[in-house]
Image 1: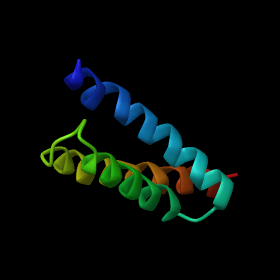
Image 2 (image 1 turned 180 degrees about the vertical axis):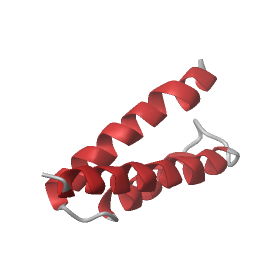
Image 3 (image 1 turned 45 degrees about the horizontal axis):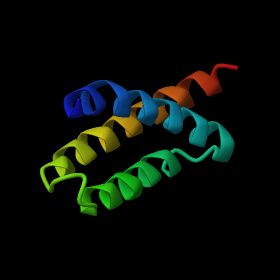
Length: 77
């Protein structure tokens, strides 16, 4: 169950949150920054191990990529 969350659910949530935060604030760094902060706090809870921090880095990079793609699409309009 944990791998389903890590491989499917969390990336979908990160992608949606990155798009929403970009369109709300129009700043590319807000979504990745909030993703990093929230997931790092989750790493410190007993439900996750410190190995989850590797996934935090992956999700932050994913958030940066999605934000820049959103930025490109919003410029075309």
